[in-house]
Image 1: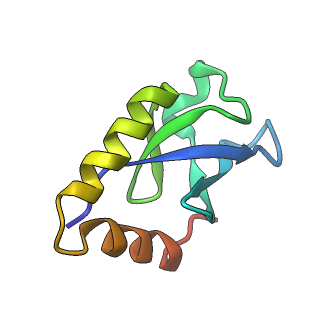
Image 2: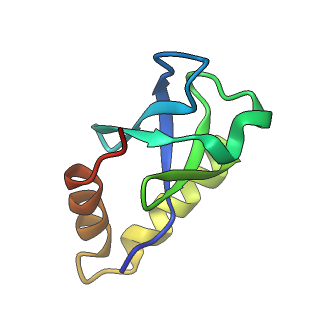
Length: 91
């Protein structure tokens, strides 16, 4: 299952390139931010990530609630998503 998972923006290496380093539960990776160019992302923002793309900007409360709901799904859903997050990359 591939869910949209909240991740916090921890770095924007080059503001001219639509990429950001994000973190979910301590796991970091680079995601494409092409869809959010107009949103003015900053370190500390939260985004909803799906298959390597930041789809939308969300607030911290929504991020926390969504992460909690994913964990409540059980059946290792959160752990599976985190493992998928670790093993994929956008360059």
